[in-house]
Amino acid sequence: MPKTTYFHMGISDRIEIQKGLDEKLSVSQIARLLDKSPSTIKREIERNSITIERSGNDCQYKKNCQERNACTKQCSHRLCKHCKSVSCYKKCQDYIPMCCDELQESPYVCNGCNKYYRCMMAKKIYKAVEADKRYNAKQHDKFCGFDLTKKELDEINKLVSPLIINNGLSPHAVVVALGDKLTISESTLYRLIDSRLIQARNIDLHEKVSRRPKLKKRKNKDSYAVLTTDKKGHMYSDYLDYIATHDVFTVEMDCVEGKKADTAAIMSLHWKEFHMQLYFMLDIHDSSNVVEMLDRIESSLENLDLFRECFPLILTDNGHEFTDIEGMERSSLIPGEKRTHIFFCEPNRSDQKGSCECNHKLLRYIIPKGTSVQSFMQSDMTLVSNHINSYIRKSIGNTYPYDVAMRALPKNFFELLGLYIISPTEVIMKPELLKNNSAKF
Image (cartoon, rainbow, N blue to C red; front, side, top):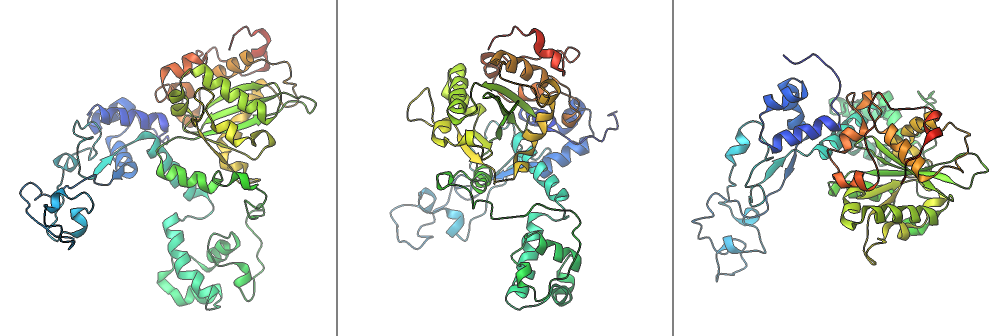
């Protein structure tokens, strides 16, 4: 009987679910492996699996179909089912899609199907990284100050904003006029306007009610007003668009400084989905040394494709050390090739890579604030990385980042960078760690 536990699922659990589905295990077998209820696994698969649209003609009548000119283009020299320019399901009135028998049975996904790559029907697939992104997005919606999803917010905006902007109605009048069509209270509507989450603004109101805000919020200025033109195409909105259309994880990049007089700095790379953060020593805290360190990492991995797989995109802030976009993106192994995609957070919005910033507190256990980093070498940073990523975290189900990451990233990535697991009982999270380091990068 499974233990009664109430921890939220993490990326490690979802990787195990995907692995089980790929191996054609049943929901009950996966539940036993994860020590969870089968209903929990079933709900996870239902909620976070994704649908992939049909990739060809999947009509039930395709085999014996003799239809011509369904699109009225008079191309009578061939049957419609052989046409590559117009899909039958868009034009043919007799089109009925095939239904896969496998999707009518538990676990209702295509993982592990040996016909997956040649099947033309619509597919349903469970991917661990995508499922974790969906879950985190839902959690963000819950705790962003309003118990509203993006879809609900869009619907409210469509109902409310035209009445306030075009009709000049007050929020109170809007609430009364819409009645049951509006699912929020008047006070919530005022807060939405204050937070600039809908098109209507305070300037559109005839009289702004003076209200004490629940929390003191940072002034929400035009995010990209201070960005230079060379960052167009690399902004945070571009990042959101990119991850919406590409199934990749995010690597967050930052720099940690020591004393003010130091010219050196520590560059950190954080894999958000795995809670893994690696540290690299910069001799000088500037853009050329950031590019040089990325070149060193790529050279150590000895393969551009391996670098691309492990660093599909990098999200960073607007620090002076990250200004050489071209240098960070281009490959040092193959001239003219691109090794990664660089994107930037909005100015003064470090919360947009908050997991990276939050993880720095673990580094401060070993290198306290105010400590000079001038004398540290890359061997020190590799040792620090190994101990921090072998440190057990409650947030990822009482395991450690390397345990999660090593199941998702290639084995040679860790071997080539000298990364290895430290026994949980031998992990040191104090300044004493660096006193007797003899490791090599």
